[in-house]
Length: 389
Image (cartoon, rainbow, N blue to C red; front, side, top):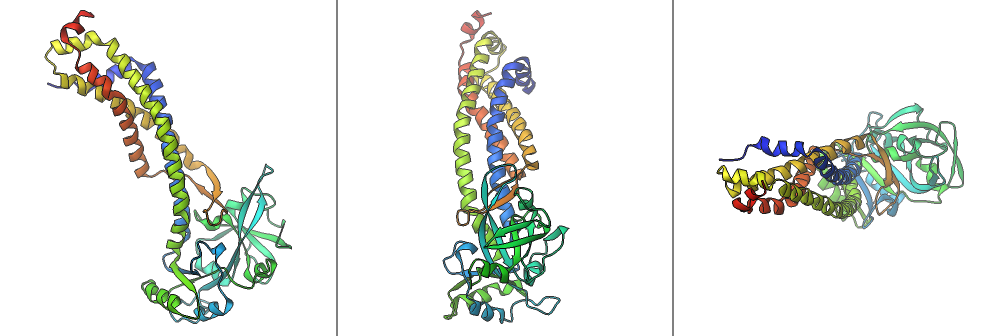
């Protein structure tokens, strides 16, 4: 004979104040837990979505990012001749020879600055990133010092309005458009003509090449051709894999740091749940004695108090996840990777996995917090418990 589930729920409802305070502490821990995972997942998804499976990025062997890489113009011309590269509607090969550099820009409403990526592009750069849409102004004219700015930068940095002038690389650059590249890293960049960007920063080499394959299945063939050519010291990766690697180290660091903080907070929540459940046992000694006298076994008492503590954790988890869900409306910026330390704007991302993990974590806290009090309740002697009536 088992104690009804409603018994545990009614006891929590009877002690509404202590239930609310304990569940609130657990909710705070789950909120931090979920926010950390949402932060890491949103950051990682933004970078992974930046790449395309059909695109190949070519950089110097051993380079951790485009900023650390260089590709000689002669090597770029050699790769451009490969027949495996797709041809666009204009008849030109879909290969972008790009230069990537960092500049420092001032943030809006503060005296703080942050690194921003300047990407020197060619005509194919736009075709290779079809997610890019101009939302204000127009496209830049190649051969001029006109630039377009991603909305992730325009919303957070000074002097990014259309027709404003940016000064970097010892030149003045006119902002002619603002673009939205969806939830990708490109929305956190400034784009201009590569043949204007390179001399402005005294560069004679490209940072990387990006091209689209006619057939994505030919990737390994092209990769082997590039990496085995003795005239070049280059490496090829699928673009999506490159951006996934860029996100891994930072996302891992965020998760480890966040989990450390969460574990520390959870100890306080577990202790709070334990105190609440011990108090419940002390206040219901006669009730426990009555249940035992009615024929309920020790295991029934143990199960009833454990269910009570699990419910406490579950309620706290639901509250924490509810408030964490509002974080999805928040756009923040942080450095893109430990290789570049450039600014990346992204949103928190709440997934089904995070919801499940958050609820499991909160119920686990409830279980740990209620286990010892439940054992104490189940071991109460019937006679001693009834004497308290």
